[in-house]
Image (cartoon, rainbow, N blue to C red; front, top):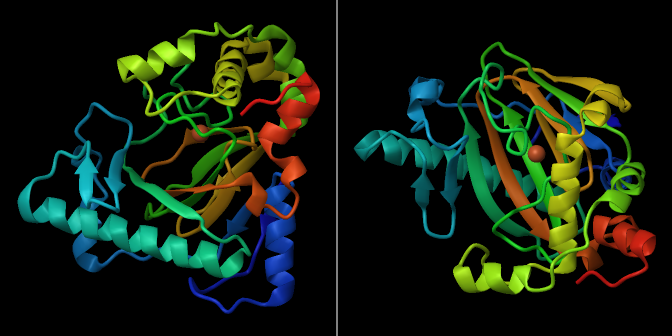
Length: 287
Ligand SMILES: [Fe+2]
């Protein structure tokens, strides 16, 4: 489930054998782990390793690199500008690495996030508690089958980031598909009209959200399904298709994350995409 890669630089060219190994591991549902690839903060940026830089309402501070707009930070003025610059530097480094390591064209760089609050000890409803095993599905941004690829860096000086990584996607889908749905035909239309979603959810989006919720709400699944303990050391990075790999973040503070979106057709083996697996299992076109 974890494929360790010995990268020490953010930019290619990378060895052909390493690139082949990265692609195979990623598409088959492993986490690519880069233990020797620290994302370094400037001395002046270490002041941002403080939970109070978040506004206390949202889980994460986010940056839209197309507009430069940062959300959910308590910072203002010059300090806000410097935090946004740090997040931008991380996001563009992550984009360079993804583009140089993987053969995909047209990878869309989406939001960048900074997660400055210790994961342990926060309280959430079950549905929004990412300490429970889940696959990522966006409630407000319909994906129509497009992939969610995420690059993370643990920038904490000494705390590891602790995850559980769960069973393969198809096993998870086989377990929960019989309990989800049917989906009300008017709901996705109404959500779009009301502005709950940006664009209309496809059947795929509805199914993925239902699977996300069903898994989190099933305490037998949470306690007893097969999973691996993973420790991401301070100064390490990792890359994973979070719409495919069951994951739970149990502990850690100060992580940076860059999200990418990608068309299924870009994959070397599109049949491994969640949409193709769900279409095969349900016998229906989903987007
Ligand atoms: Fe997640």
